[in-house]
Picture 1 (cartoon, one colour):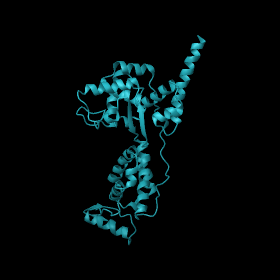
Picture 2 (spheres, helix red, strand yellow):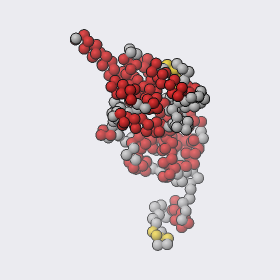
Picture 3 (cartoon, one colour):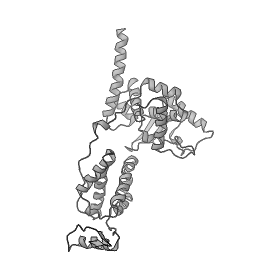
Picture 4 (cartoon, one colour):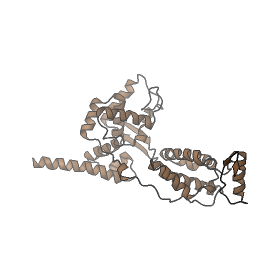
Length: 316
């Protein structure tokens, strides 16, 4: 079909409703927004108790995918998207594999909602093959060594050191560090509900972590409101994960510690618990790991170091 010298192809078969829709869209110069569109479905899902019941971490992971779908296919009828389209979208995002693999997850969740409200009869996006992270792009988290820990504690700037001590002392994921408020700290322990697992934990603090928290509280110059976050921006507002990560990257670069990232502080904490004789179950009760795979890995390394030191002492 040619309008004002511009040729636009109609993909549907002549005589069908889809042909008529495309014809009038081209003729009017406007795209008709489908009533049963992805944008409408996303909006509907966000208002459900099902979505509210998901963990904060899980919702935070899927929200960027919803925004991506809104931008790319928001106005389209949900029945028009194919499995082939989905794989193309995943391949277009293969530079960010984790995000790409969330695309079929989001589409499957949305399609299940669509089936529930009668917008479609199937869910073709369930069980699609995921992209694999190339071996060259896999970067293992290297646990912080004694030397790295000592250097950080000796020379780090106060705010970066506070982040560091919360990471090692709490043995939690970095995404949880920014959630701690002063109301979560009673002078002896921190409490939290993990973003990823929604698990409620009480974490008795080490002496070093207590000193770091007490110093930070004293440095404020006033008694902080219980709802005030422990890690904040300069204006007192809550610091998000990315801002915290930037602080740590700058400090690690300055001190020559880029080998050790902030995620590895959790594993350093696991190793410290293993060094003092904690069992895997005791470590899991503190770290909140739902799988013991990583505990076994890093606690095993710590125990090997302990046994090697004991063997060396006997050898001498």
